[in-house]
Length: 316
Image (cartoon, rainbow, N blue to C red; front, side, top):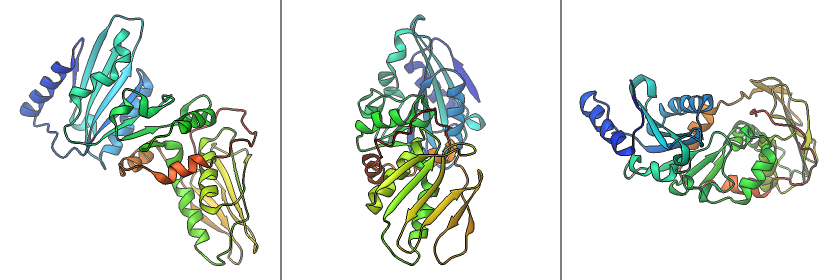
């Protein structure tokens, strides 16, 4: 069910929610959090809503979408309420803000937050330089950005990382979860030797490659180099870990598989599917505490490997 409320205010939206709850049986019981999506009005907002709807089947929530419209227009708030099949396992409130109201999202969402429930803010597009200091981010315990969708992912990652606060995370980090799992499993097998050198290859300006390199450096304490590679589909191409007995190498073959080679074992194919936004968002909603491993990876991202030249694709 979709209900439109043009030229409205948050009090009217709340009253309509109560009315729908009483007449249509739509309830907020069982919602585990409030997910606030901050984006520009347009197709990007709809794709973010769809990802949130899909993720809500694992994390039932109230989704508040702040879609900024024309800033030169007269001040106006248009709302749309989606429940039932149009909202996955959540209830979605889309707030389209025009004119001076476009910059007042922080105060607009307050009356619509679920009481006594965690708040997560997600910027699917260009994030603020300091998410925790943003009016919308300041009310949230978790703040999710996605620097890979910006014009210059590595520069944006450095800017956001420089303003890191506990509770911040980024989907470029979540996209490397499968890489991290495979590499950790490979190093758990004998011989248990120290890694002496790390090489991560990927598309130019890949934030995921930067974060994977930072994580490996922080965990293994070895020098790391990030190199440019032509990766079909973009993202990370390979990781090579040098050890005295020989290298461990994980190299992507296609969008679903990779080749893993290590000393004393036959080379084998392993599953390494590219992760969707829905999968990454669902993973980040599983934890509401600060991600210290992400912080350490940020602190160890190589800063001077001189490979920045083109826009990255949102792949890993």
